[in-house]
Amino acid sequence: MEVKDRKEISVAEIVYLLYFTVMFGARAIGLFEGMLVYNISLVIGMVLFAGKVLLTEHTVLEYLVAGFLLLISVIVYYNTGEKGLLLYFTMMLGMKCIPVRRVFKLGTALLSVSFTTLVFLSVTGLRQDIIYVHDRAGFGRIIRHSLGYPYPNTLFTTYIVLMVLIFYMLGKQSRKNLLLTTLFLFLGSVYIYLYSCSNTGLIVSIFYLLVNLYLQLRHKLCKLEKACFWLIYPCCMIFSIIGPLVTKGDLFQLLDKVLHNRWAYSLYYLTHEPVTLLGVRFQEAPNTNYMIDSSFLYSFLQLGVIPCMLLTGLFVMMIVDYVKRGRKKEMAMIAAFCVLGLSDPFLFNLSYKNLMFLLVGEYVYRKLQALEKKELRFLNRKILLLPVGDKKIIYNSDLYVKWREGWKSFGLTVSRHSGMLTVIYGIAAGGLFGVLYGTTHGGSIVGRIDEVEEWEYFRRILSYGVFAGAIIAVAAVLIFRKSDKKKKTA
Image (tube, rainbow, N blue to C red; front, top):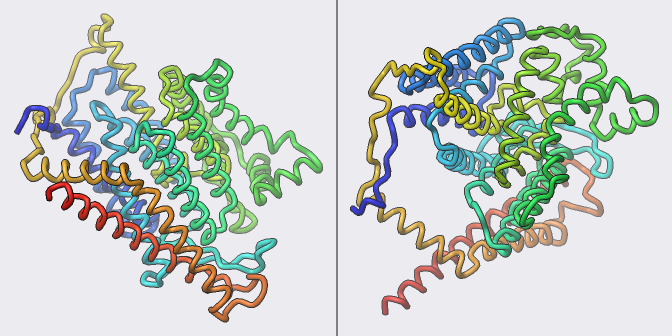
């Protein structure tokens, strides 16, 4: 084996990747708070995080920073019963000596497999789905599907996270491949919307695709564009906290309608709950519809002023740093997550999908390591409690090298022969065929689709067409690759 093919990973890194697999994987497969298996996964995750800290060399200053943040999150948990901040701080504080790309690669593998499997099992009826019945203008009475996740909006949020992971792992693409990938993921957004009927999810997914496309095609950002990214987090914070208090009359009604009553619910909590330093348990709301769907308002009222200020400071500094370094993929993710956070509490609750904490962790440790060059004496003293953590393991083998080279070859073949375009055409053609068949030959739809039974029939036929088209397209690419290989060896 050549030296360039040798891949090494430390014991400490393995433990963190196991921790991330448990924590992120639990949410990826649709587990949620209250389930016994999820509570068990939380315990396992915390044990693995503790192991990662013990296996990694830290300075006294790093231990003090970590201890302070964990103490704040524990106090918040005691005051509110909310575990989200504690989990996200472990995600962040475990990032010492961990490559961000490797964690993203693991997240892509976990979520792509889990998400596709849950959607397939749910739309085919092989797995019982959680559904919600709603009346929607223009659609009539419909059933909103969550396709294996706790709620339809959670389904779309998960898909947006998957889009972010896919673009991050693809790296820099040619203009043609970038447009094809954007088109492919947009079709996925439309498909998920037809099941979830999440307006905010569809809007944010399109927003992310457009911002990512703009950043990738833009050669260099001007100062005004950079300033917009620097200010996006504090602007979202101000909009969420101050906005409901200062808007009146028709403007308030308009925003409340656009945000599906979230504006009125935000005003209710701002006027009925106290502002505390370290969080509070909310009083019983008038009904179950009352909840804070804004991550920014959630961090201010539910978690408290001190955690809110800490989070704001950490995120703003990280965003400024990543913008200065021109990290465009990360900038697109930050913009999408901030906008999504206006109508979804996922940034700081128990969802464990806010991957920006990985970037914050990388940023914090990079800055703390820079302080090691300064004479801080005791604070720069290094401590490694379990020396085995820095031991390297070579995970390459002849079988691994052959497997990797095979996939590289497949990737080149797909790119050369527009394999992605073939898959897109297959999915689009399959979906179109399903729609045409269902509306012209099925006999179950008469006129406009405005009944629950008609919607369910339409969705089922569409899904059969989409998955059949995808399978046929992938099979065609594999067959073409095999025949192309035979011609070369002949």
